[in-house]
Length: 239
Image (cartoon, rainbow, N blue to C red):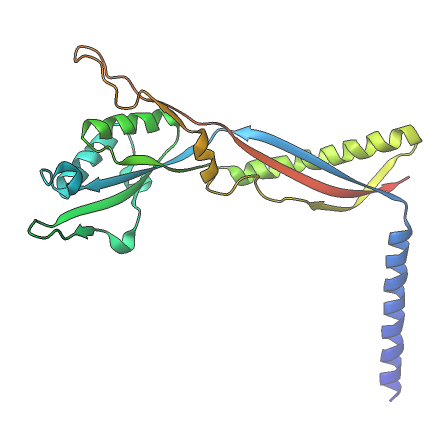
């Protein structure tokens, strides 16, 4: 019985001490501010959707031949097929079209990743030469977005401190240690795949050709930079 009573007293003392500590923390004079940082980043992961279909060739070229031609064309651009070319829908590797009274026509969809707009333009041109015109930009992304986001969080924290100093200097007070800091939006301004950035993709001269004596022009493909932002909220002791 004495042990139980002693334990109860100790628990009550611990709770009282915790409450006093919390009260002391709240009673401290502090300033609460926010800080923000942003930047524009050019996407370096561009995903191209490629649809190969025997139907597009009016059944004159087999799907297997189209695949081999596409592979050779992409290799000529120094693209690593094993790393950057994947079947879009592995579950349905081949889609078969059954047409009454006609042969079976097959199709297959791929997604190709390239690192810049210039390479994407060359891919469009190569595939167009092969008669593979059912291509489009699937989505774009940024490879090092986590690293950039951490950098922005650091800049946002520094901005919060600068805002605190700007508010307290006219009052002849100094900023002490931060007693609380949190990320307001610990992510990116846009979705991970940045699909809405596709409205900023511009393609000009696609499919245009000069005379055989001149080099074929490369389509002009450009992307608008993607906006990334970070913000923090912080509380600093007032001295």
